[in-house]
Length: 436
Picture 1: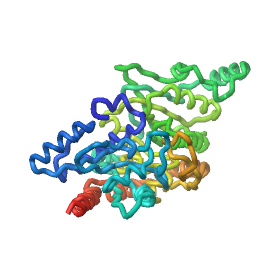
Picture 2: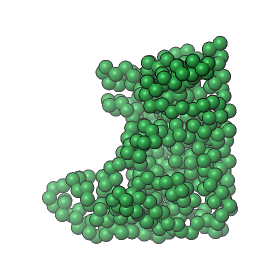
Picture 3: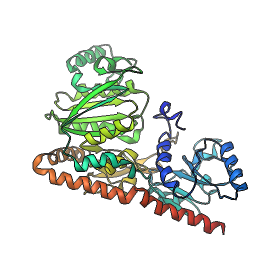
């Protein structure tokens, strides 16, 4: 993926590696010239040119190990995210040995992952004392504009988000009409989970939708809880996020859950949300689902207008949106599990209790239980919503300000360019030592 193709590939497998790469470039440029390549031929070409000029060349490959570029003449360092306590150590598909990450990484001199949690998982699986480094994406410095507005301005009472895309707003949904449609479907013998199957245009009746070139305008106010995720990634646990929100704020008109989805099948997801809303009513709170690319200034406006960022995932390799919002000074509601345990704390978030349970690696077609993830306690999530809402009130604003400052300071140490550059120096030192 590159600048030309990324917008057509949002939500596809490994699309987030593009954004990870982009976040690393400013830091990498401190240490030398950075050239972005897409394939083996380009990599080998630049390697030979650098060799002729007497310049040392290293390829940092931002991709999961099974997509690692091979047949490269220069040193290749894989840079990847991982969210489980074990890594694939067998071939998951017959004839595809690259899905055995252990065999792939054993051939690499060293590797970089984005958390100490995944670093431990990799080191446990590999033979010998292989150098594995944990460096998060350096996103803190890029949030300086929204950070200044959040920390040094009065809280936003309302804001308008305008973008090109699509939007579903619960305030425009007629639940009585949905109940009638649901009853008609049940009379015909259709199960509830099939209610919207084959009806891609149903959400169009209740959602403010757009076509390419047309804009969407959403006015948001009150306590805004924001989350960004791919709804077709089972690890995101978004059903719990929505149901807990409605149980917590059933009688609060000034509470809004804003979900920005990073996937192309918008209608299929909103159909499921609409069915959930039918079953959750009556309610006064609001849910807004948006789909579409946000320009930098629009994304920053969303940050400034958000009261909290919400993450209810079973596991995370690092979670770029959560890191970005915290870096800007937006407190969170999130668990302290997997990679999140390294930057989510009680002084920057309402921490959710979670418990381990067996699961499978996300790209294992066999879906065999070979790993562990963490399920968030649903009632703890409801309580976190309620408590966080009270903290936004005038009498508790000093507590909210502490959470904002805690977010900024913690993430500065975790993922600023200076912090990550110090860790990256150790990578370069290891390369020099191993070559000497």
